[in-house]
Length: 347
Ligand code: G3I
Image (cartoon, rainbow, N blue to C red; front, top):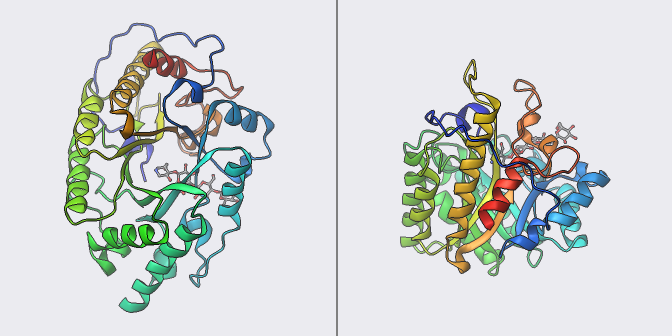
C-alpha cells in the first residue's frame, strides 16, 4: 500500500513555473467526455452524503469500493465470509447504473491473521474458497476484478514476500487466484493492479515482467491496473514511457486509482504553490494523453481515487493532515485545476 512517502519518492524535477490552467467553467460530465467508463472509488459511509451522491451520479459511470470488497471487510477471523458491506456497495452501483469494478481479491496487506497457522492443504482450500465465493457472488454484477493487488516489491526489486506467497508460491499464488476467479466468473475482466509503476520505472518494469510471465504460463489475466497515485515531481516522459511499454501486451489498461498529491514528503517543501500546481497539471496531462493514445479496445476505464479532495485517503492520514488537493473536484463539488488539466488533455 503506498504511503505518502512511497508515492512521493520520485526524483525532483524542476517543472516549468507556468501557471496551472484555471479551473474551467462548468463543463460536461466527465463520463460524457471519455470514450470509456470514468470511475470513482467510494464507501457505504458516503452513500448518505447528498453532495457526494449527486456529484458521483453526474460525473462517473463506474464504481470501485474503496475498501468494502476487500478481505478486511469480508473475511472474519474464523474465515467465514460477511458480505454485508460488499453487498451495500454492489447495490449502490446497481441502483445508480454504474459498472462495478471489484477491488481486491488478494492483497499482501490483508488476510494474514485468519490464515495464520493453517496446514498447507487447509490454507490452499480456504484461499481458493475465498476467491471463488467472492467472485461468484458478484458474477453478472462486477464486470471486473483486481485479482491480485500490489504484487511487486516497494523498490521494484522482485516480488513481495508475504503469507500468500510463502504458503502457495511466489508466482503460483497469483496464477491460482486468477485461475479460480476465472472459473468462478468466466466473463469477468481480471486485472493485476499496482502503484508507482510510472513513478518508479524499475517497479513498472518488474510489474510488466510479471505480466509477461503470467501470460506465457497461460494465466487468464486480461488487464493491467496502474493505480497512478502520481508523484507530480517525477520527470516528464516516465508516465508516457510506462504506457507505451504496457500497451504492447495488448491487454486492457485501467487507470485504477488516480490522484496527484500536491504535498511532498520532504521535511521542507520549498516549491511555490504555482510550481506544485504546474507539476500536477503537467503530469496529469501526460497521464491523460498517454491513456487516450492507447488503442480503443485497450482503454478499460479511467478511475480517480475519490470524488472530492475532502474524500481523499490522502486527507485522512492524521500525520499528513488535511488540505491536500489531489482530485478533480473540491469539497464543494466544483472542478479543480486538475480537472481542467484532464479536460484540456482530452481536447
Ligand atoms: O469507515 C470505517 C469506520 O466506520 C470504522 O469505524 C473504522 C475502524 O474500523 O474503519 C473505517 O474504515 C476504514 C476505511 O479506510 C475508511 O476510512 C478502514 O478501517 C480502512 O482500512 C480503510 O483504508 C483503505 C485502505 O485502502 C485499506 O483498505 C482506504 O480507505 C483506501 O483509500 C486504501 O486504498 C488503497 C487501495 O485499496 C490500493 N492502492 C492504494 C490505496 C491507498 O492506500
